[in-house]
Image 1 (tube, rainbow, N blue to C red):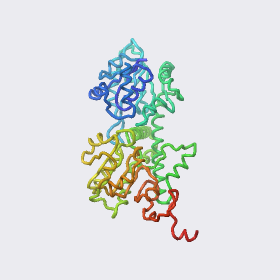
Image 2 (cartoon, rainbow, N blue to C red):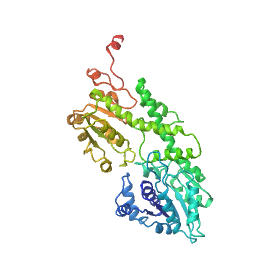
Image 3 (spheres, rainbow, N blue to C red):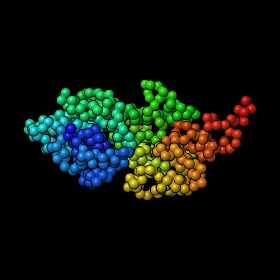
Image 4 (cartoon, rainbow, N blue to C red):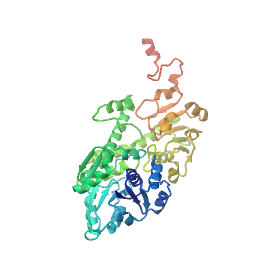
Length: 464
């Protein structure tokens, strides 16, 4: 089937490439000439694991093309996927529909009575956008133009997007009639996933509600982590116990720095705006965002607590990880930005940072920090090592080598990568989220027990 994808941002590029991989003839269009030129040359405007070779292969096979001419793309296609971002400025801004409106007018100008077209919302768009699109296309399209509107929300995670597209948990189709449903089932039916067919408004709301619920789980477990720190409970064990309940599941129950990126914050903001418009109280979601922002402040306070004298003036902080999540170079709303800027305001003299992918993007945002070639180099001369992203490589640090390179023995871990007892035995003052700190001095006795329990005190041994 001939398909057009309008917008070559994160969602559009992945969507177009995966649709081509399914065997469709796909043309991706965007008004951003520099981005299209890069894609035509096989260069990626962002990193997504496995995307570059998949684009090259499908371009070579003749199933995938890129253009700046939206009208051309629409004229050649039967189905048009809208993958245009609507994020406004500011954390609580309403969605900005102007880019979408411009693209839809271009789409309308390319339609005519000669061919039926199905216009599909793929990006996460505000609820009731389908009704707005239908009115706009009816007003702008030539007389007699035959079209329908539908919504197929995407459920892709950055860093796992290709897998998520090709192996989805479910496919949601929002459509007004059987004709549109049949077309979308023919496109997505080969993915062999549970299929939910509903109205367009419900499909739009499903996506917003799913992301909002995941954000609430993250903020909830981070709030429970605060209780753990005050009471001596262990958030890792608490989260495991919660996740064993099949009604809850263990996903998104990892305490840490909270969520970042563009999708969760944008969808929460959009849902809250809709609720406010209809005079519905969604303070639960507003609190979710407040808790999430506070996690970044708490982490800075944790670093202050970890240093001698609780004073960061003149200190050097090694930052391991910059991207908001592993396997991506995306710095949009990354916790690292707020944390690094906050540390600088608290008097930190130097930030030495390393990230496997995101340093190029971070340099454009924060050119005033030092970028290093490895975690070991970043730790040189540091007073504190701060872990901000849970990159898999960080879980396998050679601490013997690290000790030889850096005299730093203070680690503040925002992602709970390591066992606190093991870190204490290695000689580190290790601070994490929702878990108790164990002192290295307690493990100087060579007859200390294993990692499963802290050493017995003299009083406890006497009782034994």
